[in-house]
Length: 382
Ligand code: NAD
Ligand code: GLY
Image (cartoon, helix red, strand yellow):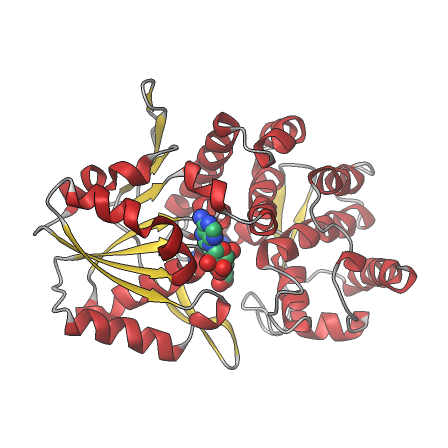
């Protein structure tokens, strides 16, 4: 993994060094306006296929088109409805058949221009289209820039659960224009920040301390702080994915907060009562509470995590989720549906301190239940 800094326009590069499939993540404000030049080395012919959602298309597709036109590259685009429901069998068929109708060839490139929904769907379509067509990620949400566009997890949802159908399929290039985040609604920005915070909490105490100092400026538009946060998150994810592409070990650390998050997402019907990144942030706080009750991490760590969430204006408590939630036993039952369950045992990512997460199997569920009872009491008292 290497970083370079182009002092002139402030572009940084992180590399995912997977043998035979290494790729760069380009990071910086204004990259979309020079996307044609960025993507040109990857093209076999001067034609690109772009999948996006209608909101992102309205805001950013013309910039991409103009940048490509400047390099003589023509663009065919498909704009889908925004929202999680687009990660469906029906839209997967839609994308694949559109690419076939457009006569996209195996050596062509399909670009995902959007958040995690468009990236996950388009990546999976690229994986199965002619047994694998070239794929480039242009993430437009903070969540997608720091997490979902990197590492090759692609998926759609089944009526039986989230992300249950998919493939590991790496992009050839990721272009993260941090300036694009200026149009992102504040709630989506903060949800993405949940994944940034997770990255510090799982493996880099200094980065978490940097976030405590710089998070509010980053949230309020500081371009250099945004670029640094995206770069550091990508560096850490790239290192983990390079060690463990298909989640046989270390990659599970990226699921810090997710066991709680998945139960809360299921309990709220995958609706906008709780965005994924909001659930991750709350889940990180609860994972630190459990770690502290098990005597694993210092007494003060959960308080520090919750204090940072409050300072950022993130949802931090279960009472911040609108509407009623099921009880502790029902939530633990929902955790049993998690993809990380092995022989019926729920896997948790716990921590020995900030920046020191580890994978914990066979966790005693009594402290987990006790933490949920206390957390749910904040809802009842709200
Ligand atoms: P999203 O793709 O639904 O985007 C959120 C909203 O922001 C959408 O309404 C979208 O239209 C809008 N939007 C996107 N970019 C914008 C911009 N620049 N300006 C204005 N509006 C913009 O949601 P998300 O939070 O990016 O991604 C969530 C998805 O990511 C979930 O399906 C989750 O499962 C998946 N995910 C995947 C991975 C992975 O490793 N593959 C990791 C984490 C999450
Ligand atoms: N977002 C978790 C992973 O990519 O493994």
